[in-house]
Image 1 (cartoon, rainbow, N blue to C red):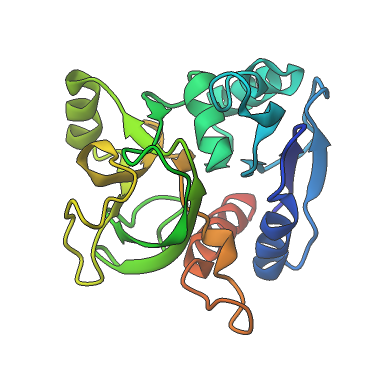
Image 2 (image 1 turned 45 degrees about the vertical axis):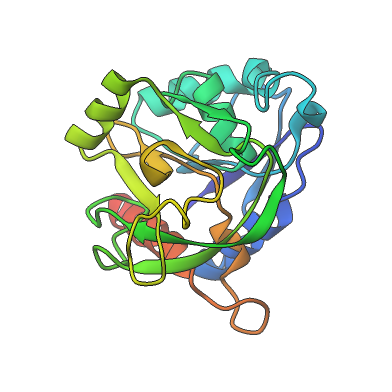
Length: 234
């Protein structure tokens, strides 16, 4: 699996993401610069990691979405490439039009830095096939603008087409208001593109891939990707 992680001014989660990918593939992903105009030949996966691109001085992710490399990423996605956006990366995907909706200020109007739990809504995707449907896993949120919003028609389409990948839930798997710390519509934590190859989510599964640091709850997401792309390359 040949993966590339895009760096923008203000990105700060690229090393965590690189370690997570290296753990499941044995290979260090390539770091890509936001001013690049093309992706390396043979790229299988592009990751837009977390951080505070351009200091969040406009809408989060809005300036990064205009970076030269985003045109190459859009073309890559249009051709069926896999794209993962985490936290600020999810914000970029919505700003660039690769995923619907928007990420608004948290309902509390405060930055949230805490553990959360997500429920896996489907397991027939490149990102979730190593989970069990309905499985709840722990992850970490660190954002001020993670409140997922879309109009009613879009929300109905996401639900009807099974494009909600992950939902904030209690440890028992209940999608309650208390489990939904940022106020996201319908407890949505992550959504997929119609071809299931683009995933955006707010929490950071790359934080939980090492048993000696913070557990391995997030590891199945990366194992899912590695297995999917290894099969595709075979």
